[in-house]
Amino acid sequence: MNISLPDVLKSFVDRQVEDRGFGTSSAYMQELIRREQERQALRDVMLAGASSPATEAIGPAYFRELRAKVGKGA
Image 1 (cartoon, rainbow, N blue to C red):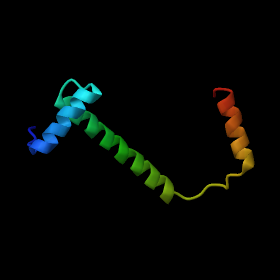
Image 2: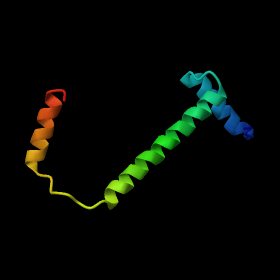
Image 3: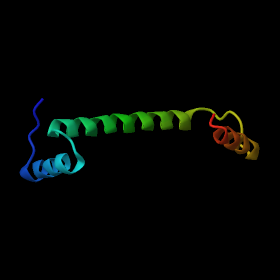
């Protein structure tokens, strides 16, 4: 795959590669694509959760139990 960029975008990519420690512009582009995949996956999970039926109300007891689990490293 080849990508053509105007000079201003190529300069930006070159600076990102240098400033952020990527070995090549391809490595930088791969990272951007991976992040977009993760963003879309998170969006899909959030939308699925938002459209799923409610199970039960969450109250203070739920959060107490959650804090206790986190405190124990569970």
